[in-house]
Length: 167
Image 1 (cartoon, rainbow, N blue to C red):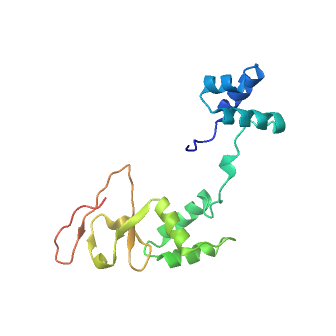
Image 2: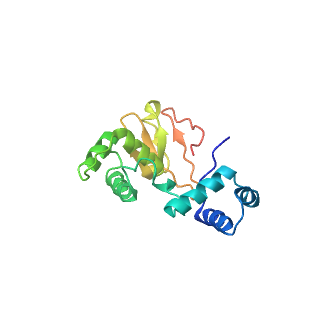
Image 3: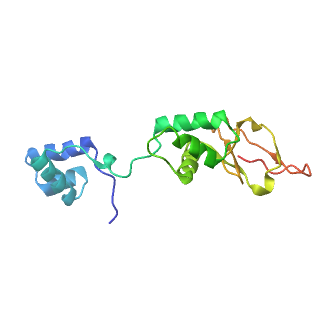
């Protein structure tokens, strides 16, 4: 049996209301479409702890780079678009109490919309519409993608042969 998502507060309230109205566990399960185990667990939690909401949103590791940190990182990238990941990480760590690794910096930049542009073999390629390019490591550069604008970019090799558009 697979696990489904946690019940919403409304669904928990329906379970508690049906049980308080005098319906049995089986009748409530048939009525609402949840398992009998779920019905009895939700009602027991409510009767013992008066718990009517899920605490699942509080589980898991907290993010080291919150939205405010993402805005700060974006300002660092915009200030120096040729900065490497090491440089961005060093500058970011100067102003925060919890320092982050280069991997966290790469992951955060990717989540923010910076994606890999080209690798080591195409470093000297000419870029059309290249004003959004930021170098994020010594061997690769990244381009901020704007999915709502739908830009596609072409790279040209040193022999001026046009390659397929990159999206």
